[in-house]
Length: 364
Image 1 (cartoon, rainbow, N blue to C red):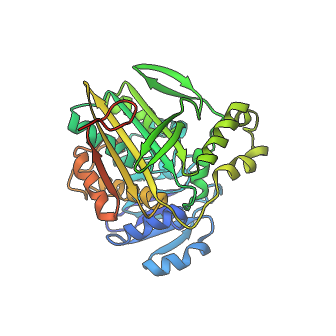
Image 2 (tube, rainbow, N blue to C red; image 1 turned 90 degrees about the vertical axis):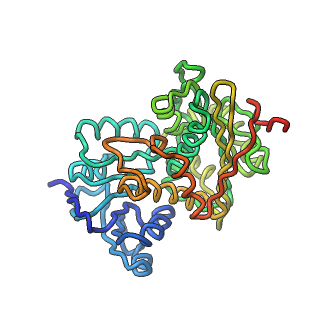
Image 3 (spheres, helix red, strand yellow; image 1 turned 135 degrees about the vertical axis):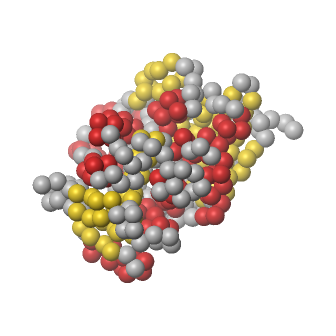
């Protein structure tokens, strides 16, 4: 017997992983407008949150073959779905679906699975950085410029911030090469290479390449000939240490499960909270625009805001008609209006003057 989700337009929004670090943020936001159903492996951990929100919490362990059934209006995937159980159940049930958890290879598989199932409801694969916020802002800048030949994203990861286990699993792929598009040519590159220093907000940050889904989707959706996402850490020492480890080959020879605790300890040192900060640069036909995205409530909150925008998108509740079939966040018909909704949740998007390719603002 398989999982069965039925479409109930008056039912709750189902949030898988709905009481985790990011899932709880999504649940609090979604519960303002919709009844919610929270699921996870250990529902007792979510009972306090469910009581706070007036929500239901149920067990759905994606590693346990026990079938799950519910009637829901939409599904938000906030926990890894390694066997596509949630995706299949949502698409088969004709239910609007948003996923924010997939790294590139799993997103590519999800596109294939969804296409084969021929979805009748929207399937928004919004795993670009911070729940698709990076791609949405890139689309806004591309709209202003009339296109996007280059999109470069620089992330400052705040090591004092809270981070869930799924966030670390997303990043724990530093020994695996990935495909990128540079100057219109596809090539393989390695994580933590092509390092440079970029000013992100008030901070000069040493950043290097990391595998993220927008580097796969933006060339397909916006026609970019170069798409690059790089990451650096709020601790310059931590960044230097990771780059040095990469130089020794550590992430290649320590890539198995035996070394997983050691690798993840390097990436997962969550604190009590920090600030999410990223910069998006878009260039087209000799013109360029830059935006800095700041969320003082942290990376989990910003990711949840991205998920909420995605939920509103697939429900047609953001002023635009709901999309059809499989889509990505940057395909929003009005990205500027959608990005403006970030401010309602305390997220600041600061637009800069045109700048040069080194990331230094051009003189006025």
